[in-house]
Image (cartoon, rainbow, N blue to C red; front, side, top):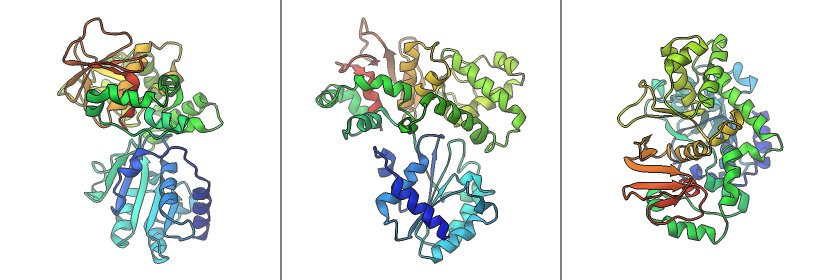
Length: 391
């Protein structure tokens, strides 16, 4: 146990996040069992350590961070460790990468049942289905999603500002006023292209080649988050990777499932399952027509965020595709994003939006235009960058 306390103290002392994540204030930290899911690379470990640093004196030993990568847990159950920690006065146990522990959901249930008063916060992959696939957790766990940096968080980090988030309703009805307030302090367009290229994943701050780091992370998403958690045999790894590449290099459109099945030499049903796994891993996003869901074929397959586009096929991108990818990534977590009609790119909560690079020749009163390349909008024309302020 002493070794874990020393590691905890070192990690907390050396964590220095230049931007505070919005999710920190959305979580009810008094709940006894909290799950924080997120795609690899969005900063889940740093998030746990930042919580510990903000709320506990590192010398008090009331809070402890542990990582399930530690070989210690191959020989000892998590529930027994949690009991010992509680006996020593522990109040909050932060468990990173919980899915690395065999029968992790049953161990978490034991931790909860056998240690009244102990609060447990754990991180897991976005591929995990905490409630649907783990009935033993029942209604006990409160689940949250940690996303990559929003454009607002990226801009605050780069400019040392503290701009707040806004609701979609605020942006639609007050975008001119909001943009004017922001523009009085900084020109967001000076930073927007950098965000599209490398701003979603916090590890751009590390002194390493970002694109190579992102490609490594993407491979880990498939090799660990999908294969390990979904229990897929290693021999199918190349098929998953090839499928992702084929989906990425095509312009966002409805997938030709039969052609994809032939390309990776598998069945149509397997292709659809693989597409869902890639979506769960936050490598792609699936856009459906109104009223449709999986297992229906999606109307469009898009990369989850624009950083992934630049990593996979930087020489084949259309600017409008990058803009539309930014749009759907900014809105999908908190809003219902569907394929629009001929005049509208998307339906968001049944409201029509059109993503555009150029000023609309003729405005339609029932469409919200999200236009790239402008600092401020007018009427129902909103600057695209402002939609990055939703969280």
